[in-house]
Every structure is written in structure tokens, then in C-alpha cells.
Length: 286
Length: 262
Image (cartoon, rainbow over the protein chains, first blue to last red):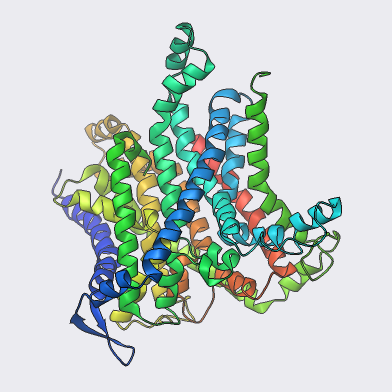
């Protein structure tokens, strides 16, 4: 490295480091510190340190039960996304020869289309005067509109599954694509039938992609707050992010909101850490 | 092929599931009634006309575009050196830097949103600071902070595949570091830069979780649409959604061309 270059290298290193410290490290650190602040009687936090927010969080049934409910929704979304994405990824990777690139693009186009559009579209489909009810009634299966499609946990799960299926598919497809054809051919040569080849060769080799896709779907759907708000309707369908949203909004209790966020953050990081430990190869896809 | 028909049938159904909502929204943007209900009555462009005269929606669109351009500028300015640092510079705490940069991508957006809100409030920086010249400094910084990671990951991935011997050859031929960068390194990462810029632009246009907490007086397009949706779906929202869909398709086609070129 010549001396003439040195100041530029220093500057080029300093810019991203300082930026990340000032716009990410400090805000996340402040969130952590704020979760130990005391919420004053006048609605403004004082900077005395206390564990009161965490005590309240775990002693009020609302927060733990909402976190569990959100995890349950996220789990259902993850399983559904995996069941939808894996066969499609398999088809694209091994069966399709013509227009493969085009088809893959067609799968990820919905990912690029406005998140909001994808969430509220389900309102048109599942609503009382919606598409599903309209078709059911005109065919004569039901005579009055079914009201429980919309504003239910099921509606939230359907919308989130729709949103995160392409996310789940991408790493699975990437892993399936990278499996050397010779491995699958070897299995065939050794008289493994299609199921045995899948079960003993393809599936184990694709697990890192499955893990990466599932982690994505779980973490992102657990932290979602807009689809539950648009499609969940009543308070019972609210997710943990909706609580954070209201604590930083109308309820205006930032320290408690920070504590809930820190719990979410800890859960997310633990999950990513486990996924990472479970599969070193999955690291590539983060 | 014949034995695979269940797989083909299933995949077709998955495709239908992925596209059904988009098709429904596009169809209902041509719905003649103002109440969105079944059955569908196709055949009007009037909602696009209503949209063209909706000043709140237009100024929100403009604000979103401004914000996206600034997010791209910041993300490139910080993210490109960031990718080089990860690829080529050794320093203590590098692993921590790598993890921290990625956090906004893997954490639910709302956490980054409330963290930045608390931070700006702690610093007494008003959410409308800079308005009306820009949509507001906090939201600009917020988008920059959240989306820098996209540029870092995309450019870093490309740098890992760059053949370093080319740069050494250039240096051996007495090119100074700037000429080597300009004629050797930059052309190899050009498509990655463009691809990352497009990605940041689209993600910024669609961002809600961080934006919601940091926005000052001027709504962005998704926040404006969300505000309308909370009162109910209007055909006008379907019209703007259809336009967004059309633009997204153009962008992704461009993007995939860039990625194929690489």
C-alpha cells in the first residue's frame, strides 16, 4: 500500500464505520437503555434506571400472550410458506427446462409489488361482499355471506403466507440449483427410485436453504403489524408489533414499548443464532 | 413429465395463489361502481382520472420519489466503501460491523423504526427538520440507515468474485490506484451497483415500518395509501396500486437483465 493511498483508505473505512455507529449502533443501544427508564407520572420518561418495565411486561398477561399468539401466527405462516414454496422451487430447479429464468422471475415479481397492495387485496377477496363470498353465493353453496373469512387470524395467516412465500422460495431454489446433478444421477445409477433420491439426496442437501427460508418467513411475519391491522380487525388478532406501535403512539409509554421491542429483538437474534448454529451452510443466505 | 403431473398441478395452484390478489386489484381498478364488491363491473378509466386530480396522493408520490433518490444516494455513498471495507480491510471489531450492518435487513422494521424515533427524539431533532426542501432529515437518514445494508451485501458478494490478479496486473503495468479502480475494479462491479441501486429505490418506495415513525408533515405514498385504506378501500387506491404494479414489473425486468449480465 503506497503512502499516497493511505489517507483515502482511512477515509473510505471511516465513512461506513461512523455511519453505522451513528445511525444504527447508537439508536439500538438507546432503545436498550430506554427500556430501563422510568415512565414518569406526567407521561414523560425520567432517566432513572429501573426494571419496572420488564416486571410489568411479564406480569401482565397481555404481553406474554400476545408474543405467544404472534409466534403461533408466524409458525403457521412459516409452515404454509414452506409447503407452497418447496415443490415450486423443486419444479423450477429440476423439471423446467424452457423459460426457467422467466418463471423464476414470475415467482419473485409479487415480492417487488407494494407490500400494502398485497395485504389489502385479501380484503377484497375475503370480505363480506368479496370475491369468495360472491362466488360461493352465485354457485349456491351458501345463501348469506360468510362473515368469518375476514377479520380473523386465518385472514392474517393467508395474507402473510402470500407475502412471504417468495421469500421462502428464493434460498430453497438457490440451494436446489447448486446441487451437482452428478449426485442425483449417482443415486439413480445406484437404483434409487425418485422418492429415495429425494429423501436421501435432494432433501438433506436442500436443508440449509429450507432453514434460511423458514427463518426469514418466521422472523418477518412475527414482526409484521400492517397485515394484522388491516385484516385482523378486532383486538384479539393483534400481534406483538401492534402493541409496540400503540405504546410508541396513542398509549405513549416509550420505556415499556422499548422493553417489548428488546424482547422481540432478543427472540429474533436467538432464533437467527440457532438457525446459524444448526447449519453453517445457511450462513451464505443471510 | 407424465409422472410429474401432480407436481405441475400443485405448482400451477401456487402460482394462482401468488397472482390472485394482484389480478383482483388490477381488475377492480376498472370497476364502474364506487363500492368494491362482487360482482365485478369492468369498463371505466374514471378512477385513474380521479387519481390524477388527487393532490394529496400526487404530493405523496413526489415525496416518496425524492426520499427514494436520497436513500439511494446515501446507501451508495456509504454502502460501497462499506463493501470494500468488508472485502479488503482488516480491523478489530470487523465481525461486529458486519453483523450490525445487516441488522435492519433481518430485524422486523418496526424495531429499527422505534429505535430511530427514540434516538432522534433524544437528540431533539424535529421530525420535520429540513421540510419542505426535503421530506425531513430523520426519515431520509432512517431510509439511508435501513437500506445501506442492501448495497453492502450486493456489492460485497460481487467483490468476493472479482479476480484480484487483474488489479495486480494493472498495478504491475504502472497504473496508479485511481486508474486501476476506474478501469479494472469499477467495470467489474458496475452491474452490482446498478442492481443494488434499483433494489434500494424500490424498497424505499415501499417502506412503511421505519417511515411511519419518522415521517414529519408530508406523507409518503405508502403511508398515504395506508391512511385511505384504514377508512375503507376505494377504487382510486386500486388504480394507484395498478400503476405501482406496472412500474414494479418494469423495474424487476431491468434488474434481472442486470443480474444476468453479471
